[in-house]
Image (cartoon, rainbow, N blue to C red; front, side, top):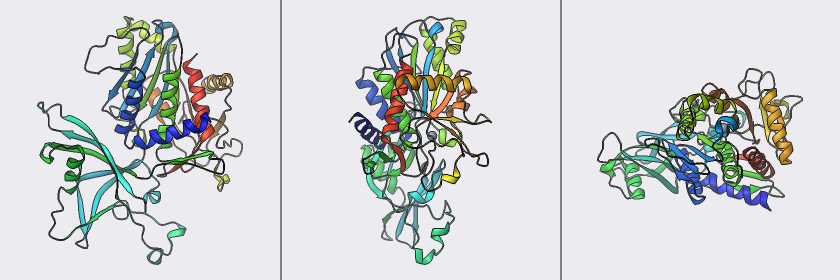
Length: 432
Ligand SMILES: [Zn+2]
C-alpha cells in the first residue's frame, strides 16, 4: 500500500535527519540521486531551462529547484517552505560534569520548546556538526557527526521522592534535564571525554577539532502504530514530515511552467531570525539570483515574485482524543482526514480567504480532503515560517500542515493517510 510505504519512508527520513544538518544531508543525498546539481552560494551561477539544482546554507538550510521554463517573469515561482530543526537539547561547551564523584553527566541547554518530560528515561544519541581545522582560518572545514548509539539518558526521579509527579511537577532545565552518560572512576580524566568520543567517531585527531554544534536525539527509531497501522509515531514529524512530502513532490512533479522551489529553513523553533532562518533574505536572494542567471531584469524579478505563490508547510493540531475541550468549538480537524489550513485573525498564520481558496482548489483537484484549524479564542497558539517569510517576500501565502498529536514531544503522532494526502496536494501544486 503506497500510503504505508510512504509513511515508512518518512520514518527513515526523520531518523536519518537526527539534527538540522542531517536533515539537509539526507535530503541532499536524495536530490543527488535524482540528478539535482549542487550550486554554491560563493560561485557564479549558470543555470539552464530544464535544469534541476540545489543550494545549502550553513549546511542546515536547503533550497532545491527545477527550472521548468524560462518564463518565470510570467509564470512565477511555486514555493513550498518547511523547516529542518526540531526542539531538542544542545550540548554546551565544556559539557562534562561529575556528581557524587562517579556520575558523569553532559551539560546541555534546551533548544526550542520541547515537552521536557518526554525526553526522560529514553536512550539518547548525539548528532550535529563539528568545525575542523583547515588551511584557511576564516573557513574551517565542517564535518557532520552522528554517534548513533544509546549514549546517554535523563533519568526521572522515583515517584517515592516525587509524590506529586502525576499532578504536574516543574522540571528545572539546569537541574532535572542533565543526561547521565557514564560512571567514572575518580582517577579518570573527565575533561574532553566527549571530544575524544567525537574524534573516534569521525577519525580526526582531537587537536584538529575546533568547535561543535551537537544535539541529543532519541536513539529509538519511529514506527507505525494502531490496529491498522494508521498512525505514525516518530521524532521530528514537526517538521520533517512536510519536508519529506514536499521534497518528493518536487522530485516527482512534471511541469513545463515557471519554477518549482522547495525550501527548508533552519531555526524555526527558536524564532527564525538567523542567516539560515525564514527571517532572513536567504530565500529572496536565491530567487533573485535564479532570475539573474536566467538573464531577467530586476523588473522581471519583481513580476516573477508577484506571479508566485507560497505554501508554508508546518504541522497543525488535530482535536486531542482525550482533551476535546482544548479546541475551537466549530473547527475540529482530526487525524487522517486531510491536511489542515491554519487560520488566525492576528495573522500568526498567513492564510486569508484568497490563499485559502487557492489551497482548497488544489486539494479538490488532487482528490484530497482538507480541514481548517483555528485556535480556541482564549488560547494563544503558535506561529510558523509563513508570516516571518512574508516580511521578506510579499507573495500570496497559505499556512497548512498535516496534524499531529503531542507536538514537540520527543515522539509525535501523525497519520499515515494525512502524510500521503499532503504529498498529493503538493504534487498537484507543483504541477499547476
Ligand atoms: Zn514546526
